[in-house]
Length: 426
Ligand code: SAH
Image 1 (tube, rainbow, N blue to C red):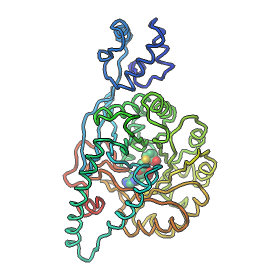
Image 2 (tube, helix red, strand yellow; image 1 turned 90 degrees about the vertical axis):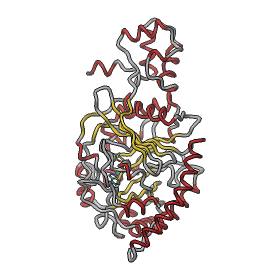
Image 3 (cartoon, rainbow, N blue to C red; image 1 turned 45 degrees about the horizontal axis):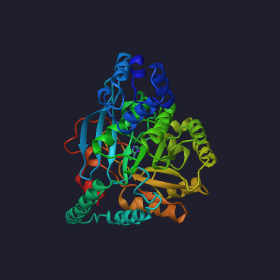
Image 4 (cartoon, rainbow, N blue to C red; image 1 turned 45 degrees about the vertical axis):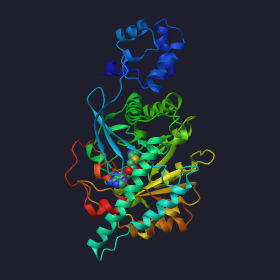
């Protein structure tokens, strides 16, 4: 298996490709052609690489080299335009990768993108709209359904615009098959960790989705979030190699990428030392150690004091901030007191908070807080001077939202209660 993996072109960097070219006795410029074929044009077989002479392609084939493109095994499309891909690698293992046609998953769509401030205010107002009068549930449902229809029309328009010139689309990438971190509210945790992805498999997800969606950076603006299955900082070297290649060979700018960690403190420090690196997001999810240890057992090893120290010492670039994610669990970590504690933890940090109301799933024993609880939490942070945004759930109906990636091949017939479903789309 090890040998098979080393014979894939996808995942090799400039130096490794150059070594291959020189081993073949080919001129140096072939390295650039090969890099461009694999990462730029995203060709999937040696036969397609017409820029290379037949001889060299045969040499590569004899040496056991293949491109190693990731295969899209299944594709689920949400009513909101989100697409969840089930992607298969050479050894048959699969992960999920999510395409969000008009942003979010982390950075875009929550007011954080430079020049995109307008989006933030529209999100706030749609958050306000999400309130349901529970005293008259049926009328409320009808009202929401109508709102939803109207929104669907604007949404369709937006989707068409996005297709014409996609500029805020986001791909959410997995870094491991499963996850070892065991966060109590996350579906991926139920899988345990099967293995790390190679750099080629991490990039392979991006290439497969770009190809399927017919978009091509840098002309088309694409954001990447390393927020899919797995903990990127427990697969640090492969993740970093992939990130560098995505910048250098695929053409996606560093500032368009964000990696999220559950809080692997030593790797946060290593990450700060990298020359080329995505932006940093940290899954905070609780406002004190007792609560965080209960929700995220890794807090025993790296507690809030260690985590916040690493965050405070993290070398931020100009106009950069750290994003903290906070999953709100009804009655567990969503009290006003939790918001005040969180504000205290974050005081003075150049940061923002993304609030995520729990995305439900089978086997997850927590509930989604009501919209007014989310709003109150957000308000307390904002009053304390901390920019806080409510992340819109994407693709909940197809199990593509945060914490819902579990290599689900079938969509359960009634995945999410209708009320939730409508409420969160509105
Ligand atoms: N392992 C990394 C990368 C995954 S990012 C990390 O933990 O940061 C996925 C994000 O979704 C995390 O911020 C996580 O806290 C959040 N999340 C997990 N389960 C969720 C759920 N059921 N509902 C909403 N958000 C969830």
